[in-house]
Image 1 (tube, rainbow, N blue to C red):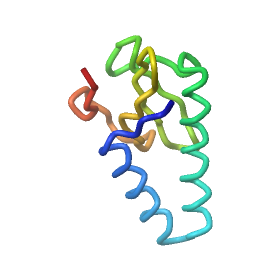
Image 2 (image 1 turned 60 degrees about the vertical axis):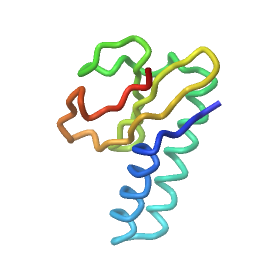
Image 3 (image 1 turned 120 degrees about the vertical axis):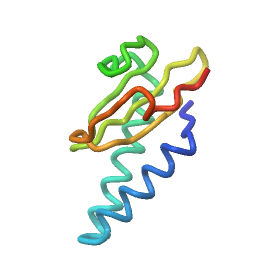
Image 4 (image 1 turned 180 degrees about the vertical axis):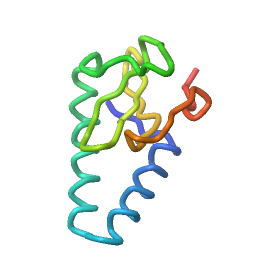
Length: 99
């Protein structure tokens, strides 16, 4: 099961709005691809690499185009914590880990 945190949902909306300025079609396609990848990750959560900035085994990421889908592994689910552009400097405090 995939759970989307509020910050991750906000990230999706912001990504869609930004891309839609140039192409509504590409915006929809990109968001669909991100959501599909999250579903794939829920079935194979260890497919992603450990987020280097955090160094926690349960916090991982996969890349979709130039975006990082950052998620947390739980025994019964995967929680998407954020979707950020790969060129953005990421700090530990930027990600709200679920405790």
